[in-house]
Image (tube, rainbow over the protein chains, first blue to last red):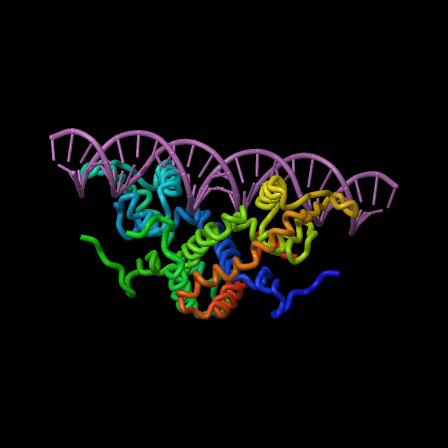
Length: 157
Length: 157
DNA sequence: CAAAATCTAATTGTATGCAATTTAATTTTG
DNA sequence: CAAAATTAAATTGCATACAATTAGATTTTG
């Protein structure tokens, strides 16, 4: 006989359907799959697209700052940026001011890709619209949760 | 001179800070890091914990159904389950009823681990509480968004 | 019933993520 | 100023994810 967990059941908190984490996790993966389809024609992965968003705002950025913006560390970014360099989207060079730093710069091709990316947000918004949610409010809530959870695994300051 | 994108700017939609996807993505990663700390004493990764939640509900489950519950495919699950089998948490065997299927079953150790996991949700809830959000409502919203985005990449039905 | 279609896992190859360590450069300190 | 501490990337090793393909079993069909 399979027992069914109820509210009063000590097992209730361990039901998959109860987990905020699973709702968050599975929604992120689902959105990632939608982005993969939309970004494929641009030759970008999801994370690469996020990096390009930063570079389209400021065309030269140290790896460190890129990591701070994206909340990712060099273990993720170094190979990511190398692939983007191979793809001809960015160039990487040591900062002459401080040789520890590596500056990432958009190439012409990388900068030009912005044109093709301009309607990506609209396509994604279209896919999200079916939810009927206030997406702006959802975004604000997620940011509040993220902030409560703490940014990176890196030590404060 | 760096131009600043404004609402009327065609670039405004490409600002990182505007992206729901980034809020979702970065919050998921942040929560994943919190889970990693909480789950480390149990010897579970985040995804393994999700799989255990399903198995603690029903101690024998075909890989297919596990994938449907977690919205993951065999490319992710097969190696995951093999690691969990090596760790002594589950056993895998072909279903005699239908040799295409593989049944995943909790071992005694796997079932026993539920005791140690019982306060995981509380620890996580504690970490989330600082956000001051209605987490139940957030969960519902995320599920609505996920449903709008479509479940798996697998074809419908 | 036999061939075709379908279904289930496993496999292969690519791309994240992250902890921990390493290396080189810069800053801080005694 | 030289040693110690700090900083920034890169590297290593492990664990997801997922598309595409493969292999074997079962079901459907002609």
